[in-house]
Image (cartoon, rainbow, N blue to C red; front, side, top):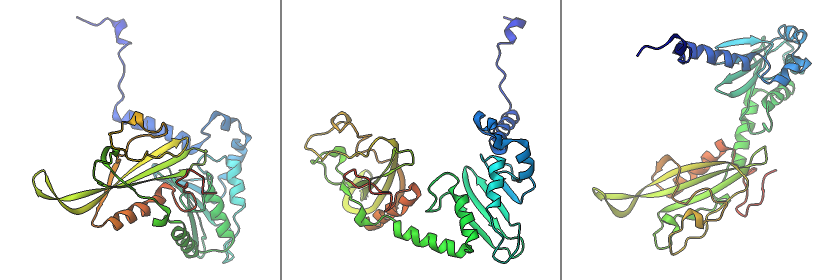
Length: 311
């Protein structure tokens, strides 16, 4: 059966890979080069007079996606504010004026650097630094450190010392025995701990670490009594209204409906595999060392009774 000409207009056009990539590039450039939201476009800070003035300054934004530096731009910041940011930067402590300011973006991760064109001094702050508490905070901190005369070595040393201070220690954590199906009749097969912190929006972020015993294999599908590895698993929980905990193990099997209404899952839900350790102590340390990447530290952790411990 032949298609009528009128039917042809209903046939969808599927873009080629080249067309698809070009479309993605245009969308990304819209976010990278100009106002992101309509209300920003109405802000006088995006006026062309500010844009032309900002392009004369020694401040740039680099995107790994486009592999180029754009002068007078910072991602999501109006040209007027870009001018204000650069005007806050003082000459280098060597006396040289007009240092270069550079925002670096790669896959959504941002850092901000100030570089002296004469002596080569460079100061860089990242959005993941311990004292960044708000959006674009790395820019303010970089300018503060530059104007104060700090070198990168001093900043890195302070960062390392702070990381050591706030890192979760074993005394901050309660490891609960893991009974499969939360049944007392089942032997302990490992340990788990639930950790929580408050997000900037007031919601709760949580993470569960589970350490599962792996027994020696005597024969195929037959395990012995000796533990030969401690397997670390992890699972995150986002946008929680409050912390939760699992009920005490019982004699009979508990289904999720039997749990407290705040429970998101059960003790058997381990999450993703992380690493296999030779000792239980190493497995626990491996879990706590990784807490920092999820923003859980001694300043932000929520106590096990649910009370907020951080600032």
